[in-house]
Amino acid sequence: MDTSSPAAFVNAELLKMYMGRRVRAVVQVLRNEGGIIVGQSTDGSQLTVKGSQGFPPSHYVEVIGIADGNQSIRAEICTDFGDKFDTVAYNSLCQLANGKYKNLFL
Image (tube, rainbow, N blue to C red; front, side):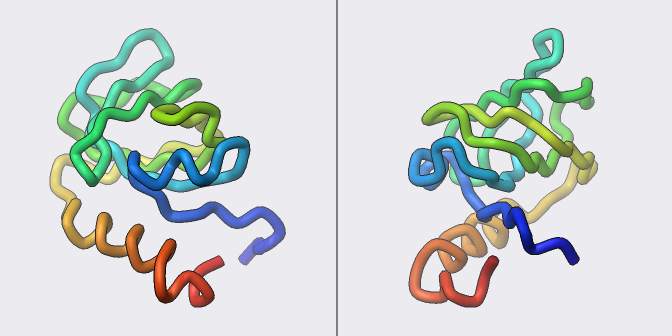
């Protein structure tokens, strides 16, 4: 496992804490706009993912990339998680990874 450039677990609310840094988030695709995904974060807010491939609407996609705005990520890697995903569990993971148990995460 390469730990030289870790990606913080984030949702839309936490993204602003990591401007210019590597992050990972899961979004549900709402629409594709020519290399840009407009999606819903696991906390219910909207995120824009730049430089992504086309993914079907309603699919969940994990995005690893650079936080380049309050509500946008410049994608490096996108992984299709299909049309079923536990957003509540992932959102809880984001809270734990950025809160009391931050030291347990990269």
